[in-house]
Image (tube, rainbow, N blue to C red):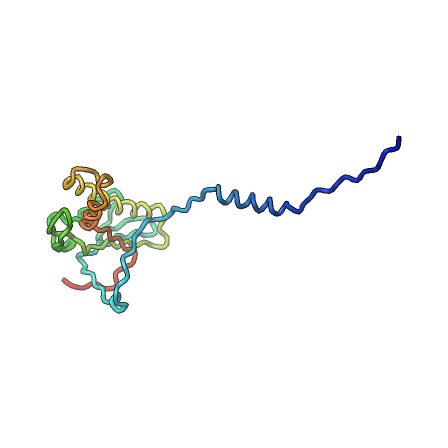
Length: 195
């Protein structure tokens, strides 16, 4: 018997690119990417008049300077401080419970659920850091400031509504946020004015 010399058929490579593309799409769709990084901040609305932005004057008593140097040393309101004290100092500044003349001035405002109340809506916490500041120290400062607002809001929710801030309705949360608006600035105010 004679053996036939058969040719082995070649691999059909015409669909290889299609398969590779489909695998790429599959992995792109099924792979989750963690994109929620950074600090959540809501920017204030832009001024209605473009010339108005240069005319913003913030009274010195309404600004709490929080500075962090290259050695991660913290200065709050012109005094050296520890990160553990920042939250309480910020809470006292934001609320100004004793209407201290060296703290933010209070203004009357009508807020739903609260009526006419005296609040420090013009306060600003100005955070300034050095180029050499560590990211960990910067985040600690930001976390403490946000925690100060959260604690004040939670305390207000408990006293007014008898429940945690997270359990409040959207209308109640909006009213509480009007009472304690979060004003953290990383830009140095242009001018100081007033008394």
